[in-house]
Image (cartoon, rainbow, N blue to C red; front, side, top):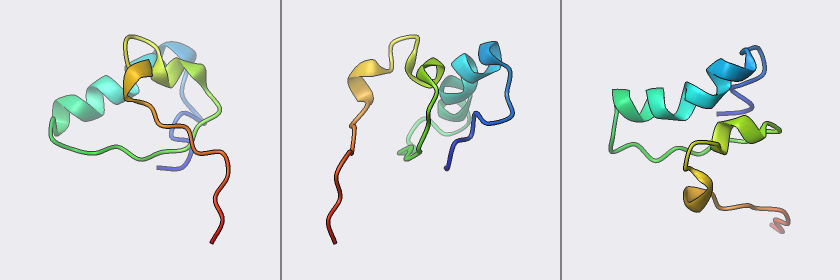
Length: 55
């Protein structure tokens, strides 16, 4: 997902990952974001930051 929080209220952003996980608990979520709200509520340990990709 590319910046799924772009048009969501901050409070809804905080719930987005939990809601996706509720729909499919076995899903691997790959997304880009500029919002710290998406990794709030305990998701920090599940985040891998990619800052330099060379192909």
